Amino acid sequence: MSTNLPIRKIIHVDMDAFYASVEQMDNPELQGKAIAVGGGGTRGVVSAASYEARKFGVKSAMAGRLAIKLCPHLIFVKTNFERYREISEKIRKIFYDYTDLVEPLSLDEAYLDVTKNKKGNPSASLIAEEIRARILNEVGLTASAGISINKFIAKVASDYNKPNGQKTVNPEDVLEFLEQLDIRKFYGVGKVTAEKMYQKGIFTGADLKQKSLEYLDANFGKSGTYYYYVVRGIHHSEVKPHRTRKSLAAERTFSENLSSEVFMLEKLERIAEEVSRRLLKSNVAGKTVTLKIKYSDFTLQTRSKTLPYYIGDKSVILETAKDLLYQEKLNNSVRLLGISMSNLNTGKKIKPIAKKSVSVQLKFEF
Image (cartoon, rainbow, N blue to C red):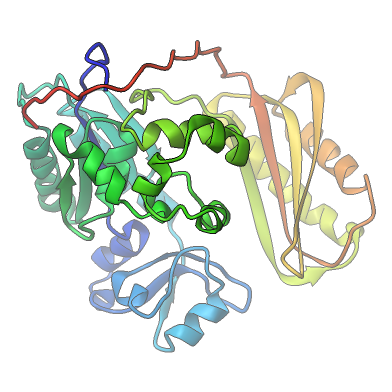
């Protein structure tokens, strides 16, 4: 990479099976057992699975019915987000002992820029080891970490030695690491994109690197430019301590399919109330209301309306959601409804970072 690019030392910390691990920590009788957080009942969905359950193929976002087929002795545990937030706050306090450049992605993962850190430690790898040890000793949970020159590579690396491990991709090893990487491991390449890449003979980073910028743009749209640069170790995104929230939502899956709009109004009222509460808690409001409808055949539909003013009040959110519900006839019976608010009054315009050419990455202590 260009020598005038800032040299950064980025750590991506990812808690191991976070929700499930918290439940096992709080309930010793669950330790060493296959558990799934959420997913109970005939229509539940798994939020997280312990490593004991993952051995049987149970994973997050899987229907509870399928999970129990794969692992008949699976134990379902109700979610407890207040507890997960409490633990997450303890972990973040540890992060802030090392740097103020902390970008949480969720309750269980975050980026840390330790290029200049509060400990004066030049080794990002040693800092990651120390952080993981403190999380284990002070919180009681294990974490994994990836360490490298940018967020993209650090995130990919954090998944390598899970659970309770870490991987450092040194500056001089970046290009080789990316060339050998399975295309499915590239952050931002989903199942559909991976299949499309397979059809075009792209299986590894080396295959991807052989494709020109024009080819990738033509075949993968705006994402093509992103793929072209990340496979060359270029990812300009900085660790942002205060990430701007882009949307806020709440949804509910019903115990029985609903076939009439009339039966959905009570459900929508409760969802609108939850969205309003979250907006108030976050001290934001939004202009765009989106109604999410998941039908009994699992097809998904969204309907949106943008208002000329910011709203946060439950009654206005509900009335807008009702309008969207009655906007057109339902395609089938409904298993899930959700309301999201976007176009929030928190956004700021960010100047795009100019693309820079590729040369050689400087070596420095990692």
